[in-house]
Length: 466
Image (cartoon, rainbow, N blue to C red; front, side, top):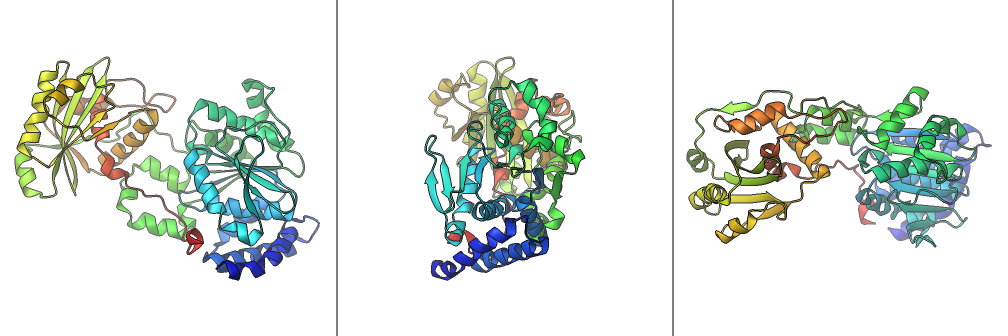
């Protein structure tokens, strides 16, 4: 494969110069881009769709500032990398590639590796921060960073990858400062001044500089900020699931995707900035009358009892018992207690009744302060979970989908959980405020089976194996 790519290096590098030269007629530039993508497609087994041609063309244009919104799995990172390589090879470019988190940065670096040979580039690291780089023969460079190095030397290409994944305040601020690297640095300005200049930034970006955002949408993130600034100016370009055949095919067949709540599907696949509303559960819970756990465990050989525990300093300890089988979940028992004895009795009741078919998952052990008594009683806890804000957001999203699709049901005796279910709500900032919901948190601990990976990736053929 490598030997078959080498003969194309020279022509690709020459075509890059044509594709980005604004003094050349647009049709010739477009034709050069099409040939580059044809070579890439042949080499790596990729079929580039019309929306990808348009996206890459837009990226290498002289448009100073825009936001590419794309559905989950819509190939935006791959396409932006290809476009960045074309720019770096076609003209002298200093690029800061800033990702919303470390996994996203690692994904970008991974996807850049197959392009190195075809473009005659090489991997390196920056002199000061030792960030990973891609170095080109003409002195161009792409520097990869997880949204921490966002001031300093001027960059004429800034790629902000997945701003919708950023919820940490420091990284939100860094995202704002990063845009200023096209003009120098915002490091000497306070936050109010930076925000005041964001709207004008679109027009102030110097000639020859480019700022490119790409992300799915999410509230309370930099993606929301720039979407609202750039959309009225016609500088937001949207690719929904309906335009991406491989995502649409996956969406139509993957039951895990379909189990997600409607707001998540609308935002992640149809690129709508959806309000999450004040009430988390939009419908009444499905109640099962006269549920019998012994009968259920006998009837469903794949059935399992899940025992979850959570602790809250205001309301004490909470425990739930949940029946799980292929058809979904039934929450059938609950306990709220401060002393350890009732908790031990609650857990042993199911461990002894269904040996080998019970799974315990608790909140992080340093928080469950009766854990020593439970362990001393000979009870083994299989898993612990740090229930921080990000974990809670993820779990509640899964929980919402289960309830919406009636895969989470409740026995009529779990009255505390049902009452909390009805009151569970978001604050005005879209976050879950402190409220009496830790019975529901117990349930959230136990929905891991719905967290199977459902990332939708473009059909890249041999792309990952080169």
